[in-house]
Length: 98
Figure 1 (cartoon, rainbow, N blue to C red):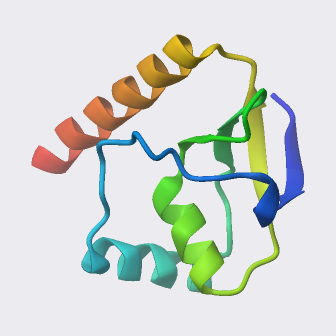
Figure 2 (cartoon, rainbow, N blue to C red):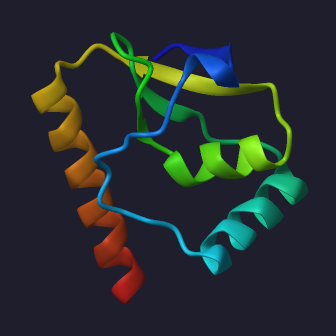
């Protein structure tokens, strides 16, 4: 897995992502980034620059004026990228229930 630093304007949120982060969640993400900085890279579809994992972090980074962030690029077609997004969201949703 290669982690690299990219300019924020090179990547974009997934407009089809079903998950929407409320302000409380975004505030929690912001607090974590303030305390620990970015310790987990965003997951980005290599061919499109679309964020597959970390849309909330990207939004907070942009709001905070960051110009760069760490990403892991995955070489997936659109169907595979959607499947990965859905699987990650499902896992996170089940974890939130506990």
